[in-house]
Length: 442
Image (cartoon, rainbow, N blue to C red):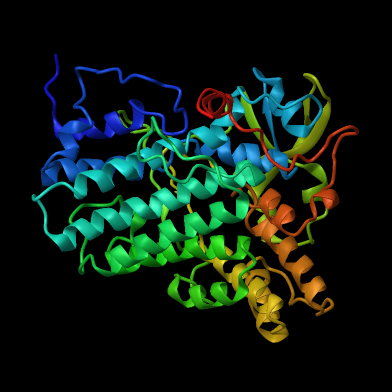
């Protein structure tokens, strides 16, 4: 039997609990891992550090499923999966959606980082091993990733909303509506930002090298505020968004790829980058999107045009010559949020506030980086928003935004349907475990 070493807390948090599956009615004790009680009763600093490492690792869970599900729903990409036709049929509205299928991982996988965050918050609240300043550092980290995980869940669930209180996984709150869910997520992120303000000059734990530039409480807060900015634009609260923008790492002159990134490593016990194309999984760009890209647009390099089109024939037939090539390194990092997104959000805020010159200035930052001429189209609010949505399509391709963007602007009907009979779903169904929990716990 292995000893209960603190580093194994990461494994505990990743594998022993399911925050969004409250139907699990008893805890299975694994002798190789310590119990939650071992870290929520005067945890040592080493244990808290291991929990923090686990939080960063858990934030990556479900990433591939999420990005490929929302990309499919938004008809920007498809998963040509040789072992699972439902990527092309059910997610495209050709067959009824299944609330117990694999693609529900785009919701349920993010329950684990929420659970991890709640364990950290409970552990920090019941220990004397670290100072109050250090406690704020752990709390700020936990609430930032908790808010991010909830936002991913909500993006997929839409009007179904999310359960904002699962501190006791056996007594979770009821799901609340979309607007209330966004407000709750904003509150979690705001709490994290306040905690980071009180966390001192340095974190008491180490973050991966992919968080360079975001590895102190002050700089990590800019990441937190960037996620809060996403929430604000989803709320269409442009005054709040304008106030948040300068608190992020937005830079009109900086690297558009700047931002925190998930780290991956194929060497066990870490995990390889899950977004690579394989012999059985090929992520392709929808043909019309890349056929329509402006000549000379460097963002076309996000796909590689094949001499012979790739064809999928299981349950539906579709061909495209465009194979994604954004992720080719098995150890490669994956961005969480980038400055390019913030620049386009800046453009969107300006357009919504009728600041035409500022909107066009930020649009042109992105266009120049893509090798394109300045924007010369109409400058009405509607025209600028459409121009920004177009830039977001190419700048943020395969980053999980197209479907959400078109939904929040009530433009789902404008999404091109590559195959007759396809539909654009507004959301996934509530996962079966959630449905059953509410059925037996009215």
